[in-house]
Image 1 (cartoon, rainbow, N blue to C red):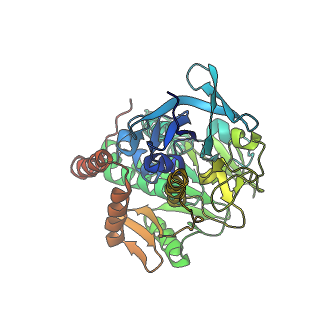
Image 2: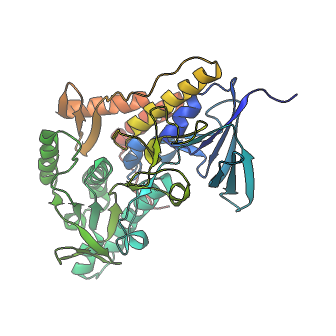
Image 3: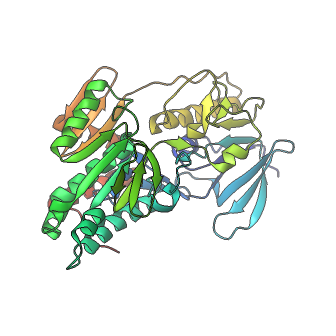
Length: 411
């Protein structure tokens, strides 16, 4: 007997799509998830995995086990046909193509790192969006330290290998620089005592402040904390070109480096740019306050790839999570023929780790900083992890790091 349930396809496995998946009622919809990544990543703790404070698998949740009675396809969506309500897909592993029909479609494919078309960034830079990125960074840190330990290596080459550069002064860039500093000063100093004095960390920011979305006092506190930690902060410094061993700035200066992590914001995926829907100046899909893509009542978009017409919301996990939760509840209500209300974002504040067991909390009522805020930072993120498995693993990782330190093996 043919199912009376509508077929709902969710594209993506980030905060927006995963939150939709967790709340949607599978008694009301036949749910299909299409994503080239078969797990959800709790990205606020991703910088901690780059140095082993937290292990990779502690912050991921497999899509197939996230919800009963769903279908998952390890694939990319390549095209949306609005005439016959179908999507074209390509298997992410073998490239085999297939099509799926839908009654309702949710586009929540997220965004990619914005290189601003600067030459050499894609070729020589490292990004921090996926677990594979975090693992590559972790490998490169140890690799550079081992290469710098080679006997009779020229001093200039050793200094270059030990210069770790972060481009972008947002939360991800700041937290990675902080985690790297902790790794070097708390763990690697014992493994590489003869070369740690030559290690430099430099953070480049094109604007005139770090963490520009935070309170100005907290931004200044971050800069002062980094100065005490000997992390060099260079504001109003724009990258013009990236080469294999040096960065060229727009002021003409050349900066040798051994590793560069690029974290300068988002841009849209080629798939989103190719869709025949209305977009804003940043190529994000324009929706109404119910997340309908303009001109359609059965196609929705949310998260970093979308924007509500007339509203400006930050591209954060908090926003995407609230959007996904709202959309799922709305779809559940619609299936029950109940009235729905437009989405209203509830800002609950921002958190950031800045190293040395210190953190920032920019909350609506409180502007916190220091050690006590670090305790709050850890507690808040622990409560937001999506499963008890993740919560237990992260706690064990923190305890293990506190007792035994971070592992410096290269594998």
